[in-house]
Image (cartoon, rainbow, N blue to C red; front, top):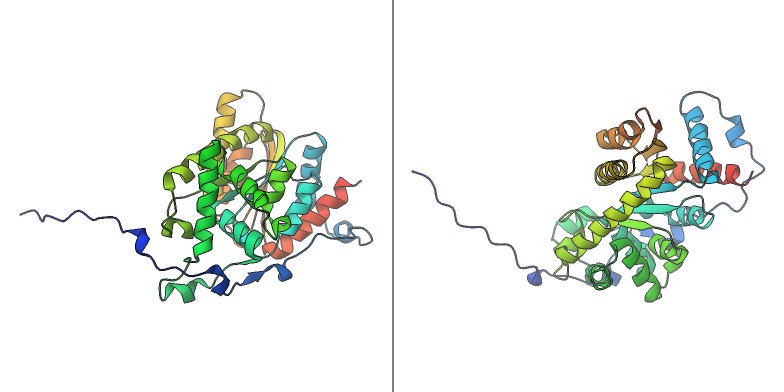
Amino acid sequence: MATRFRRTSPVNLDRVKRYPLARRVNKAERKAFGRPMKKISGVDFFESLPSFLKAADLREFITLVIKARRGRHPFHIFLGAHPIKVGLSPVIIDLLEREIVTGLSFNGAGLIHDLEVAFFGGTSEDVASGLKDGSFGMARETGEMFASVGALADREGIGLGEAAGLFINGEKARNRKLSLFGRAQALGRPATIHVGIGTDIVAQHPEFDAAAVGAASHVDFRILCSVCASIDRGGAVANIGSAVILPEVFLKALNVARNLNKGKSRLTTANFDMITHYRPMENIVHRPTLSFGKGFNFVEHHEIMIPLLAWGLRLQWKR
């Protein structure tokens, strides 16, 4: 005899218990963030590197990125949330302002941490501690700010990334100069967000509008498809700290670009992460460049490797 089960009803998120963000202890505060180098000359670090293995790869990748930019091709960066949480926003903003980096793409967590930094000057909570009593991710303001960005995108019919920049700048967030979305919007650069429903803490909050957020994120996917059409004609890409979502999104956006824009593909890609993952290796380093360019993989901590990368890019850019 077959067992009959009751239909499982969705939980009512209006009942969740939340707390003010000011009460939370952050692991990342703005006073500990990195900063762009003021002096990039006078040290022959890159010239001192041997021409072997990853040292040679790093110099070659930097050379190919600068070649792409001098040819007016994009250098687009894909960012997981971790680079923001280890204080790299000022370093990346500097590359945006110098027109070395031309655009940014994030997962949903990237917006969460950027919003918290922009409005409150700190981010990154103790997950294990909060999980014990169900308070993890339950800061009220974070859910409300994310919902406001989704609502703005829905009203204006724009992508989630552009709406984030407009919201941060429009509300005159106290630390908006540290906001990647705020600076990208002010500079007129594409910044896209690619969400997974249920992957981010904001899905726990009653204000979360999955339909609005999903539609706006799909606008961003289509924007990224347009960006990839230019990347595929001599541009460069770096994936920094996204193990799954952004490598998958990039592969599909690049596929759409190649489907709609016939011609000779040529691009340079690199993955930067603390360990080697399957999807970045396949979807960033190997598959996109097969017969069409060159891919690199660098394994090192972001808080060390990305300032080094920025240093090398700035040295070559000024020559």
